Amino acid sequence: MPSIENPGFYGNQGFSGIVNKYDSGNGWYNDEARVPHFFLRWVLNQFGQRAGWTFKGAFLDDPDLSRLVLANLYSLDSATAIFPANHLPDLTAGGLLLELRKLFNLYLDFDVRRKVLDLGFCEDVLKSACIIDWTQKADPGHTKTPETINRLELGYELDSNDALMKPIPAAMDKYVTPETAENEGGSVLSIRSRLSTYLTNPVTGLARCSQPGISPLNKDSQSQALPKLLFWNGMVSGVPTATNTSGARSLIWNGENNLVDSGYRHYERFKAGTFRLAKNVALTPADLATFSFKKKVHIKGVNYLVGSAKMNLAKDQRVIPTQLELWRV
Image (cartoon, rainbow, N blue to C red; front, side, top):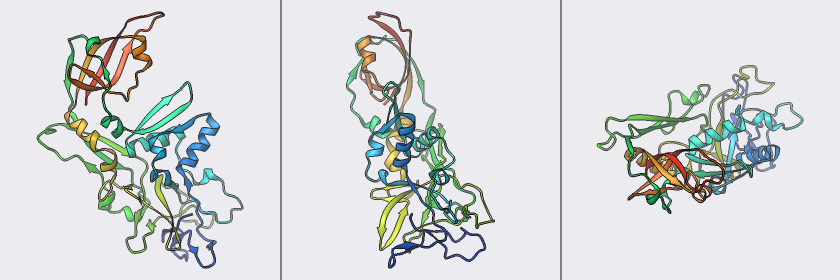
């Protein structure tokens, strides 16, 4: 229950302006504007238990990202119990994963047979070594197509109900790949996540927003806020704190430790210099058994990522003709 500055929580009613205001001397919260925030990992684990899936991977193992909480505006005013559904965003579990993917540039690797989802980083895929050589399996002919969508526009949907987002603060504004000689004339790939975050008050160190909360005591608004993330920072100077930064990570697109540097720089360079190749290869059952789309393949001096693979499978095949869509790394 982190303390968050939100003077607009109760509209025009008298209010301290602090959600989850904490009295460190007595060790309790004020009765007004008490809002639980649930850890993202806990939410995923709860869904996994109900659906029979397991979540793992570098994203969940990251010490900073493991501190992510889902921010919300649903107050416990007059409530006698906490119902998690009241405090979670209006997203399906699959929708939440897709929005996380866009925010952090994740690679989602589904093992359907074992019901395991590996959440990794696309940056790690692009940085990985190439250990598969299909040069002898590839047909010499191919069709090469230049990549014309070679710049990125990265951002998130900002909550129009938050008065602090009007106008959009520079730190929260979108990022666009600068035009250079290498990418000149290309178009822009827009990636926009529904997940955003709160600003931080540089004086108090608390997250801050200005929008009505959801409470039976609040007649000004009952509308859901857009989903947001914060890092749980623990007790800071005797105050329970969650902000948009933790360690070497932040949840903003600009400034120090931004989302672009941590999750999109290699992908940005990849988009600027790649091209698409359509090529036929002759694979074996062993090739398919050990293949993964996150593994690079080497063909005649060039490394590629496989975008798609088309083949007809039959029983007891020793050679499997395959049509590949390849992207130069």
